[in-house]
Every structure is written in structure tokens, then in C-alpha cells.
Amino acid sequence: TTFIIDKSGKIAETIIGGRDKELFLKIINKYLNWYFIDFKFIENSRKSFFLGFLFKLNKSYDNFYPFMVKKVSILGSTGSIGCNALEVIDSLNHNGYNIKVISLSTNSRISLLSEQIKKHSPETVVIGDKNAYEEFKKNFSFPETEILFGDDALSEISGRDNYNLLISALVGFSGLKPTVNAIRSGKDIALANKETLVVAGKLINQLIEKFNVKLIPIDSEHSALLQCLAG
Figure 1 (cartoon, rainbow, N blue to C red):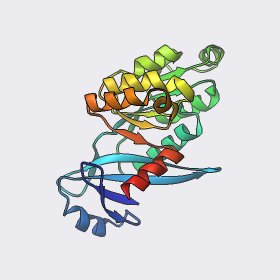
Figure 2: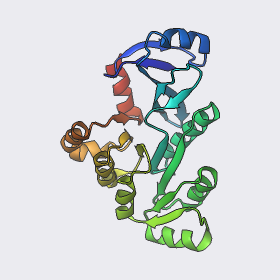
Figure 3: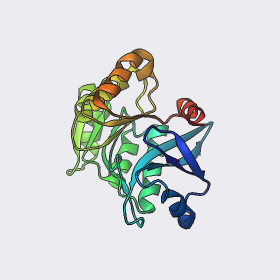
Figure 4: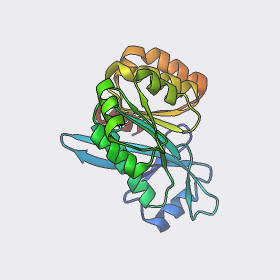
């Protein structure tokens, strides 16, 4: 489903089955300076998940260029949200988009992380558990990928300038500091880590306004609230 939205985020029109290019172009022609957001819904056990990406229309109407999500950092990439995010990225790239995975992280699921590295070739990965980090360094070799350890590394890579969108799918309070660093470096946030808002919602809202970034909820419950608010 493709939603035509204005800059305030209000949905103007909806196209069911957004791959119908002729219909799509007829409608988008009315909104030359507007953006569109492409959602993919994935059923995953008892939860449904969606991830939205913002794009800006190219003047030729023949190609759609990523607006704010060309380079993505995924914290918690081996959890259900992280894996689904990578699936969405694969699907979008398969359909002509150009989205690069810059960094990934896991706490201890190093075998799955190694498979993600092979497929997506990130610049950096972070492993949270010390024993898992040592085991990874011993059993896997990825000379083109920077391998880091711990919470400080998560916060450090979140403040880097080599990506556009942070997907925060970490568990619990650990997501707060990386999210704050990402916002302060001007990154939009796709947030699945609800605890970040529970413990510091006022601070996060202040920083979003101060640094003029977007906060996009992507986990099931709060993404459903966004859809209800959008109408």
C-alpha cells in the first residue's frame, strides 16, 4: 500500500497495490513537491510488523530516489524487528531502490550476525556480549567489516555521519543513549524500542524538535497508533 502524504504527515490518498505505475503517476502528478511512504506488512508469529521508508519523487517520474533512508544503521539486527527490517530492505532493493546497510548489532546471536554480514556487507558491527564478541573474533573473519564491542560502541556508531536512518530495535534501556546520539547527529529514527520513550520521552521529543528530525514508530503497537492518528 502506498500513501501519498504532505510534509506534515497527513495522508492525502491511498493506492491499494502501489505497484500500479500508471495509476500511481496520475495521482503523484498532483503532488509534485510531496513525499510518499511505502509500507510493507510482514506477519511474524503473533505480531505484524511494518517499516516505512520516505522517498522523494524524481522530476523524470521514471525513478524514485531515496530521500532519507539511503544508508541505514540497524541496532538489534538479529531480533525479529531487525530481521524483518532487513527483509524489507531486500525487497525494496529488489524493486529498484538503493538502500545500503551501514551497521548492524547483536547481543549474542553471532551465527546469525555472520550470515547478515555475508549478505549485506556492513561497514561496522557491534556485539554486546563480551563472551560472544571473543567467540566471534575467534571463529569468524570479515576483514572488510569493523567489529566492535559493547554499549559504548553502539553509542559511538550512532553518532557517526555515514548513514541517514537509525533503526533502533534494541531491548530495554540500552536503546536510549544510541537514539539520543543519533538524533543529535541529525538522523531520523525508526523506533521499535518503546522503553526509550518510557524512560525519556520528554527528552526525546525536545531533541527531535531541536534537531529537526523524524521519529517513525515501527513496532506493532505504536505503529498501529500512528496509523490510527493518520486516519
